[in-house]
Length: 215
Image (cartoon, rainbow, N blue to C red; front, side, top):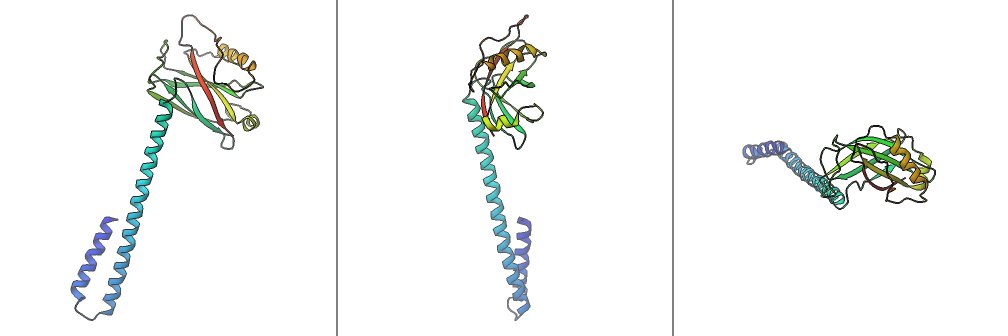
């Protein structure tokens, strides 16, 4: 853009130098056309800079907002949203150690409550500190792949997400335990059931979570 403006400017100066003192109507027309093109190019350049600046500002604001959101939350206090029409669940999980990854996402819905169990792990058999939050794990999943009831999701507009940090690969005991607990609940509450299955040898076996909304 800058190169084109410079070339047109030089060409205009040359035309003026050669024909400025002569009666040349064609040259005057050409000069006017070049001047107009220069004006248009400068406007386009200014608009492009404005859009780029605005885009960067929005990115910065978005990143700052996300960081503020998860720093203000506790460990495993998941946030995000879901869209039935887009067949999507998006999760953000604040954690207090690095290298934790999402290993499993299971549907643990009961008659009363839409719910999923998300297992995170880093292959270390120890619990993580309560603070500070050092990272956020992100994940996007298809509602249809998890066999969640789309009609119930649209009706309730809520999804309980339980985050479990454990190195157990067989989640059947966890799933059954959480389901039994959810059956006793009549509404969407953040707190998980206090009676979690225990194993030997010790595993992290720590959990958290929250309610996300959508429709």
